[in-house]
Length: 391
Image 1 (cartoon, rainbow, N blue to C red):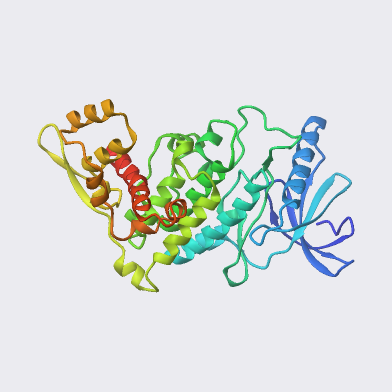
Image 2 (cartoon, helix red, strand yellow):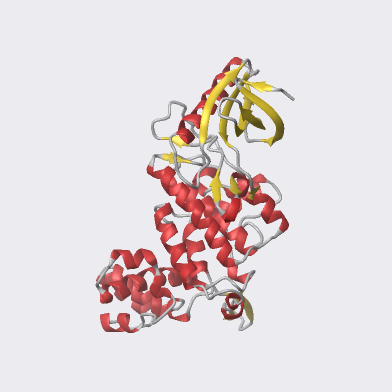
């Protein structure tokens, strides 16, 4: 083990990072403990230039971020063939280690952790930085449950000089977004998808996309619609099923458009949770339905866990009446053999509780109760439409 990196006195090795060894060290100038992340630059010239450029990109990206939920960068330097970044030393545990010991965590704790990560990502995204490797091993839980995001090693800045080659895949397969799998240009919504995978894992005890190898996992990411986490964990409320589904939407436009929007819904869900042990008692269990087949046999299928008000052909018609053309609505009405609903019917179908606390919709229609309920209906009926199409 090396003993010195620049002015820093190395104390011990903490482990292997994404691009090299991570050390615990002491800064003698201000008597402060630091964590030092390194990469070995003793590579072929072309590889060396690429790795060194990406390494300094991380320092530049993370160094611009000053947020309570993002690790603080102090310094960057180079000693011989070793480049290093000195950063805040965190007294805590990786979320990965916590999940290895406890497959699932209490819903309230999950919401608190994910909300903090989303807040940190929202701040990074506002500064045009996409993390691109959001996963439990890059999240630290420190004192009093405070959360810190680490390792912006493959972050992409809009102004970065180092560009990802077309088709080059960066990230961890289980947590990649569909656009990462396809090697497309990513934006903040890719981080939201990865955070949605983390949220699902913390609630259900396993990641939503599973395969025997990387290719199988990527195929699942591109094609599979995971069952709602409440199927595996009855303590998960219906609203959280909706949040997970929206975070994991494969269509970019159907996904949360910003981490701040996700934070708002997570907070609303947290506020709506019963206290303590009541959560598990009052949470609805997954609903088993039967669907008739062509030969009059039936088989059990799992519903999305949504209220029947939003998981029906009537819900589909209500959505069409508000969004489609008159001709399209008439055609759908004939197909489903359902009369076109009036605006009064739509308002009458509005939920009296549960869905009414969607923070995003509340923010968009302050002081307008009729418009607010209409917006709520639109959002939740979309989920019902997806359910009808899937099942």
